Image (cartoon, rainbow, N blue to C red):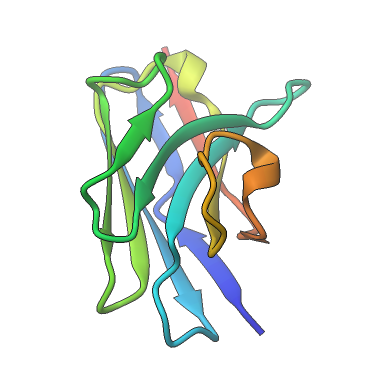
Length: 124
């Protein structure tokens, strides 16, 4: 059974930084794509960033480009999301996702495995 466990969320002031981690248990192999999504209260889950197996292919939502960086450590089967210059609009529950299908990687439906989420709150 594959489990994804996020950590690193919390409360931070606008302009601050947080680093989210997603550890995967129950799999000996790295996934083709890993991603971060977020969901704010009353809104749909939205794509934030994703990364291919080798780390050479990444995509970012326009709202986080230049502020967030996604990375992965295949030896530890872990992915990270470094979030800088945080804004109140970044407040949401952040979810880690993974897939072994060859997909574009920007949609919720592209991913088969999900974590429980970690709360990020940014105060103004």
